[in-house]
Length: 273
Image (cartoon, rainbow, N blue to C red; front, top):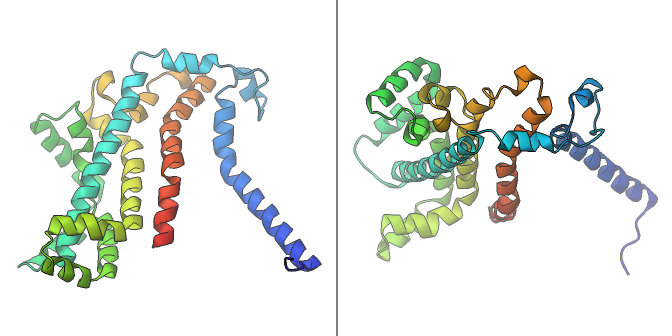
């Protein structure tokens, strides 16, 4: 027989559930309204409705009928995945070198990397563009991700996680004959999964949502990302707000699907941590 719940405890339990439900609804409302308004007609927007009077699935047909929408969406997803994979790999190796290896000038290298945090990105925007243009990387995935391959802030985050692991596992692995790469793959990454997932997800979102830099380094519609292409679809000028919201839904879906598949792994990683 389970413990007897007192009336006041029952009230607190119900109140907590109600508050959590309200907070969940507040957080989910923008996403739900986005899906709902993607089926709106112009009249629904004028009436400030929450649900479509008559769902207009033609909004989605209008979006997918655009010639370059699909390739721009592929460009955004592809560059985000590629940049996230490269940046995460580079940051793991850099953080490992600066926390586990002893070499001359390590302090100077770390200081220089940290100093990059104080350099505004706008101050080097023109020089970055000139470099990418000189290398012939305009209108390419390489040009889009060229400035997203390293982050000193994320490296410091990962260094903190690696320092928390300590050097003892590394020394033991070296005595057993393990190489640095094997130690990173078999010991360091599993023990630092939450921090690595944070770097990966942050990079995915940042690169996918990037607007100014892709706008500068792409000139042809088929090489643009969806974020830059969305402003050039003409839906806002023509008053097709429903079609514009449908395009935003399509852009959002990849991350919702990714979150659905990765949710359990992220929770397990945080619990292990």
